[in-house]
Image 1 (spheres, rainbow, N blue to C red):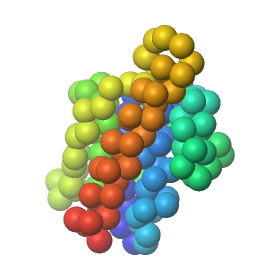
Image 2: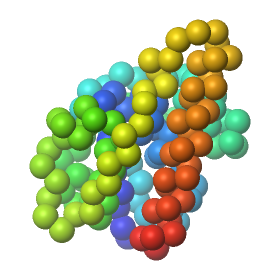
Image 3: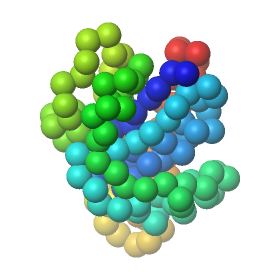
Image 4: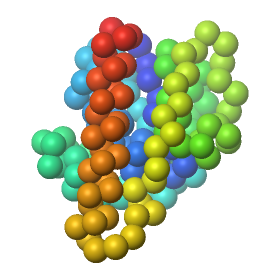
Length: 136
């Protein structure tokens, strides 16, 4: 079974959304997410994924597990902070970097903030689908 790891700063939004899509789209893969810090699962990420029919409410914010990290076939960093601070990618492991804005930093009305979460969610869905198209 192939393994993918989605890494972000706090493992609260982007990587959690990616993990949710990974579970849905990447059949036959073990899918996990983590952060260089733990910020807790963002309720807005849960909401925008529920809009897609994907329940991520039971996912947990976790720190990088080095054992899993070193066993992965594909590591994806979703922000510059994770790219800069994640452990050295092992030789032979595919790595992609998706430089996504953090929707948790969005300001404005609740509708405007959710719009930013949805934009990020929609980009992540496209990227995860590309993994399915290219690696399976």
